Length: 338
Length: 255
Image 1 (spheres, rainbow over the protein chains, first blue to last red):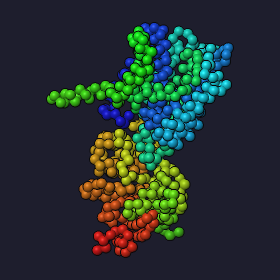
Image 2: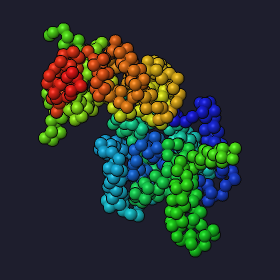
Image 3: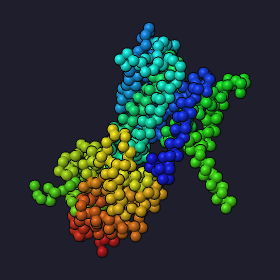
Image 4: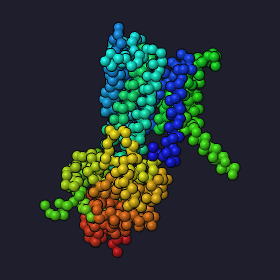
């Protein structure tokens, strides 16, 4: 990225090494982790995909979308609704259907909401997400607040040959890990491409981009749809993980939580989005644990809230910027003592 | 059609723009020819900025037509006009402050070859846009600053960068909104030399408050008061025009 200093090769290596280390650690985890740990990590990786998809809008393009849960929820519901009661659905049908449904919805919502800016954009995206929430909450389509159960995970069958079975062993875990790697890789490519640089230009100065000859509305709409489709991938995995969807997936709490993840992790960075998803989920686990906090664990939302406020106040660049922040502090101290 | 009209790169005919009851620009016609500088002067609130915005498509004209390279572009959006060869700079610095100087220009140059679907190629490896950016930086005299973060430049250098970004899109017509604003005498001198060089391959529409500079570089001057054109002609003719002296130039020029 053009905003980062230092030689390109060195900065590429310094950014690539932690990513590869985390990928290896995640791949090795099922050999050592408990069932609870694997389950938790699966959920966190799905949240990380969700956070990455929002990072494209908020951190890269500068569009603060406060209705991102709608894309997650719609894809999850499509996954549940298209799965038959008594047999598994083909993966090659179910996955594209879920992702495209989220993308199609985003095309309509984006076409309308991207005509507004700033606080109005936040409010309009929230309003559309609330509409989607009530469609699933209050109409026969979504079967109310109880949600829908999904009895079969989809199967991948290529001419009778099944490369993997999502129900056996740790296959689903690795399927989610592969999805996370795909999402991260895709966005990393996108950010360094001309499309990504144009999005960054729109974030910094949209007027200038128009004066140079960019149709910024089309760029923003494309980013909106891509982000929604990746959120849809997260929604698809979410539905498969627990075999259950309910309207809370589309609630504004969910949209808010994913915003907190990317802010906590550090806006403007893909690694930050992944880190933020891990951090928020782990903090939530920690404060909900009665072995650590005893009776007080019932008030976990209070402790979590205060912790987030403290984190944001102390780390303006998020978790991903903390290394640089400490480095600068140390440098300044030395400077002063020299 | 008279010859001078035929070779106008940018031409506005009877352009008006109202905001509610206020006519900010009222029946204005200007031509910008290749190899010449056409300046628009006027007091604050005379409608110069609105005129620029209408010419560039940032806002639409209420009446009248705008032609660019012989095509009627009155209903075209700003990005479309920009891609057709209309470059503009802004009165206030509107650079991409967090990016490097080179990236500021490279991104502007990218507008000519956007390829937004190509996600495999890195933007920095886009040879054509890098070459266009380096060329523009060289013309604007910013080659040694290419790797700096744009926000850290001095005010004068930011004004130069504005022009370089504008040149990166390889425009035929330049619409420059107060390029000398806030510049010291030395920086102004450098900028004027740059404008005189650019004039050879481009048509330039200049809005500027520095009267000495305007009378030095302009081939034609249009004077606006309250949204309307009160005079248009060569610098000598404008200097001698009594109405202009009364309305705008003041006693300093009446001597």
